[in-house]
Length: 113
Ligand code: HEC
Image 1 (tube, protein in one colour):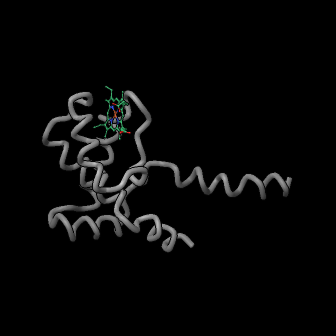
Image 2 (cartoon, helix red, strand yellow):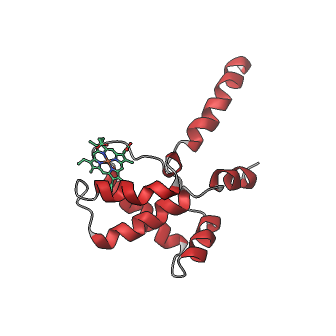
Image 3 (cartoon, rainbow, N blue to C red):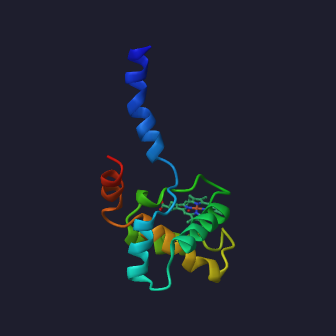
C-alpha cells in the first residue's frame, strides 16, 4: 500500500496542476497593473466565459500551454466558431493573458511549497 501511495503521489500533483486555474489575488494584482479596472472577480468572469464559449468542440486549452503573445490570435481565430460577442473577448483575453504570463507557474510553486 505504501508503495502504491509513493508511486501515485507525483501523478496527483501533476493532475492537480492540469486543471484550469482559478485566478488568485496575485493574478489580480498582476492584471490590475496592466488594466487598471481589472479585478479578481473580473478574471473569474473571464474564466467562466472561456469555459462557456470554448469547451464545446475540444477540451479547453490550458492558458499556460501557449505563450501569452499568441492568445489574442488564437481567440480571434476561434471567435466565429465560438460565436464570441465582442464584449466577451476582452474579459476572456484578460484571463488568458494573466494566467499564461511568464513566471506564473513559478509564483504558484512558491506560494504552495
Ligand atoms: C465550433 C467548434 C469550436 C469552438 C467553439 C472552439 N474551437 Fe478551438 N478549435 C476547433 C477546431 C476544429 C480546432 C483544430 C483545427 C484548427 O486548428 O483549426 C481548434 C483548435 C484550437 C486551438 C489550437 C490552434 C493551434 O494552432 O494549435 C486553440 C488554441 C483553440 N482552438 C482555442 C479556442 C478558443 C480560445 C475558443 C473559444 C473562443 C475555441 N477554441 C472554440 C474548434 C472549435
